[in-house]
Image (cartoon, helix red, strand yellow):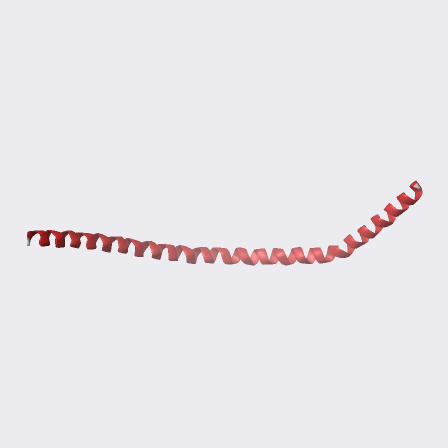
Length: 87
């Protein structure tokens, strides 16, 4: 009977430590949840800025495409003229 009481006391101590550990885990999870909410609030404006920059870059690329094609055509003509005079 003494051994049973001793075992039950040890089990009770273990359960109490487990309960304390679970309480600590719960508070840690709440802290992480709060941190995640704050990070989301911080990231959303940055995402909006990145979307605007991406749009500006795509407009710039679209505007530069005809100029790039013209440059390529002029370089091709100049290369042919150089090669023609060399022969």
